[in-house]
Length: 365
Image 1: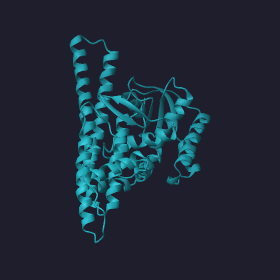
Image 2: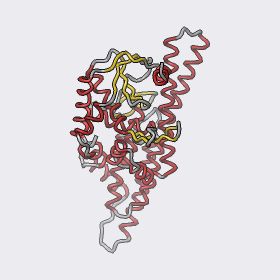
Image 3: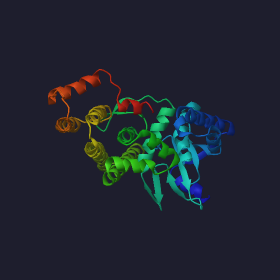
Image 4: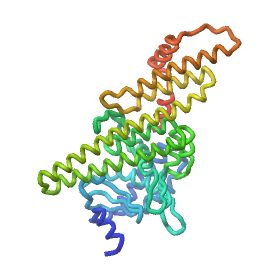
C-alpha cells in the first residue's frame, strides 16, 4: 500500500472505483458553464475552466459516517464522493469541490501555499473556515440552492446554504456585506490579497483576525460534535461513557452559540463604529442609516438577544447629533428636523421599498 492510500484510509476514505471520463466531462461542463455564465464579472475562460476540472481524478468511495458526502483531497488534487449518491447529487456537490481545485496555488515544488482565502504555512492553515464559507456561498448560487431561515444550536438565522456550513455561510455573508462581495469572490477564486486588504480596512486588523479565528473555532466545534455523534452511534457505550459524550456535545453546542453571537457582534461593532468616522455629510449619514438598518436581515438571534437593536438605537442617536452638527455648520436656511422625525422618516423610506445596498449586493449571489 502506498503512502497516499495509507493517508486516505486514515481519513476513512476507501476508493471503490473511478468516475468514468464521460461523467467527469459532464461534471466539468456543468461547473464551467455555471461559473462562467452566472459570474461573468470573474472573467473566467470557459475552455480553461472546463479543461482544468476535466483533468481532476474523481472517485466513488466509502466515507466515514458524519463526514461530508464529497471531499477535495488537496494532496493529490482529487475529489471523492460517497457511494450511493445520484449523479445529479454528485454534479451539485462537485461544484464546491471543483472550486477548491481552481483555487489552488502551489510553489515550484508542488507544495500547496494558498487555497483561495486560506493560506498554508507549514502544516498550519489560516482562514480555512472563511474560505469554506465563501466557496459555499458561490456554490449555493451556482447550483440554485434556495436560502432559508434555519435553527441550529438554538440560533435562528438566515442562510444561503441550509445544508452545508449554514452558520459559517451566514457570518461570511455578513463579512461580505460590510467589506465587499465582489472583492471577496474575486479573491476566493484567484487567491489574491485584495479581499483581506478590504476586510482589514473595513473592520480593523485585530478585529478581522479575531473574526477569522472564530470562524475556524465554529468549524472545529462542529467537527467535534460530529465525531462524538459517530462514537455514540457506532460504539456500544456504557452509561458513564455515553453520558460523558452527551455532556461534551452539550458543551460544544454552547460554545458554538456563544462564539457565533460574539463574532456577529464583533462584525457589527468593528465595521459600523469605524465607519462612523467617514460620515461627513448628511447624504452619507442617510446612506449609513439604511445600511445599518438593512443589516438586520442578516443576523442570527437567540432567545433574549437584544444587542443589534440596542446598538441600532444608540447609533441613531449618535447620527442625529452628527446630522444636526453638520446642518448647523452650513450657511443655509434649512428647516430644522427633530430627532424623532429624522428617525421615523428613515424607517418609513425603508419600509416603502427604497433600494438599499444590501439588496443590491445580495443580488450578486
